[in-house]
Image (spheres, each protein chain N blue to C red):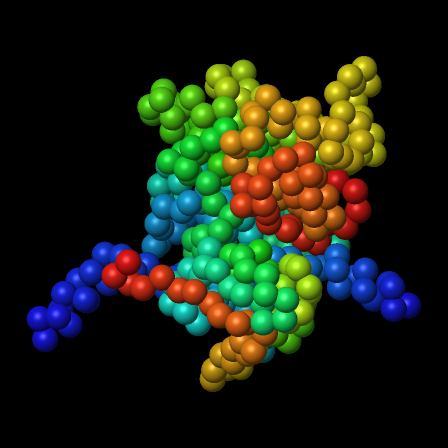
Length: 268
Length: 97
């Protein structure tokens, strides 16, 4: 009995409980681009997430039919009681079109999380940190960036982890969080941001205007040497090209964390 | 035609991070960082790196090396079926460390 009790006590401390479904309410909706919105959700059973984690969203029709999708958390865990989910409208997407066209502030939605333990980064894991995003693949990386900025503001030592973001978009209009990224770069030491545009770039643009390739990766990652941590999120094609490219320029596969975001299709 | 279908399936491909919720339901803990060995080619890596095909009645998780099926999950109203014959092993941490 005593052993049983002890095991329970340890188990309670060390075992994370399975995540349950809960009903969140929509606190705010922000249009980020023409096809991307951010939903701020107030959670009755909020717990701090690890940046990179996601929530599962579940829609139930009156006849009992259910559709479920995973959406990455965009906000930082330092913001208690609520989360931001940034969702790209997928053409004919069952769940994303409901979110985009039907949901309004005050509505309720069923979700569970935070979930995931592989594609996560916290300041305690150190750096330097290389973030590579394609299209809406920026979302979980934004959670990492916001967490990094919040941790740096609280304890300047944490802010010493250098971060480089390489962000591929089709056109300037497709860049999510553009203004906030500009602001973060201006306010935080140690953050550098590189945009690349694959379809159309701004006038007078002297930055990258092509798909991410090994030369671009070498230029962006080079100053970090070989000891960096890389997080790559985007459409499958981009993720595979970048992950292979990073290994080809000398990183170990274990340094490269990937998450496929889909389906966006095309060339972001 | 076959190419178009293959392209469509591949464009909808995610990775097992997207199946973390249902895996959590089965194992009662997050397993996406736990190692799994492909029974076909022997590649070992975190479950989160498996390729996930979720646009089907079930979830199919394939090896990122040889693309053989490693895990299959089907939910019914009463139960969850886990077909793990494509995995040589899954290593789960013990609660006491």
